[in-house]
View 1: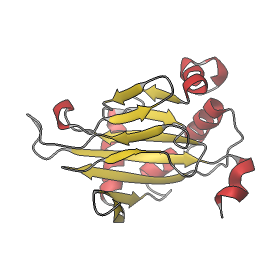
View 2: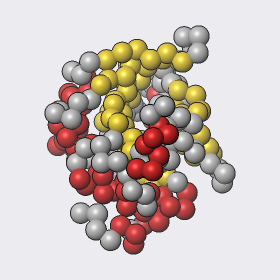
View 3: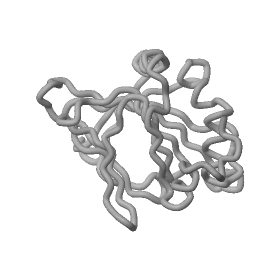
View 4: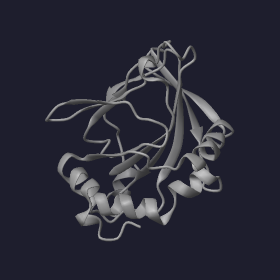
Length: 193
């Protein structure tokens, strides 16, 4: 599936800008099963600062259909091919659910060498929840749709989301994403401290 990755436009874009958008990356048939995996997984509330920003984070095990997908060889090949790094085979995976009023400010992650963010449910465009990045070149705002994915270097790129608000068609907006974070083999000892 991802053979000759160096020649793919996605990889070229990632290697130049440290991010690449993959529209319709997950099939509509798989989305409902993956979303069910998230909503039925153990969760905890994550709070940043003095209860200013919060969301729900869900533990995704490799035995679920979403976990198996994010641990699959095709996802690994995509991440290692795009990054050009020798990666640890097993990524750290989790999911996050943002609801009305929730967001995350621009930040850089503390660990990981390449990250795949998969959108499983998205609010309507007027409800916010857009993924934002600030790069050296520009500020970028992407309204991810269910099934879209974003491959990016979360330790280098400032990223966050816009706040979820009541929209014309969506009084209870929700944004659900799953994450697979990969680590380079040479960085494993540093990341465990």
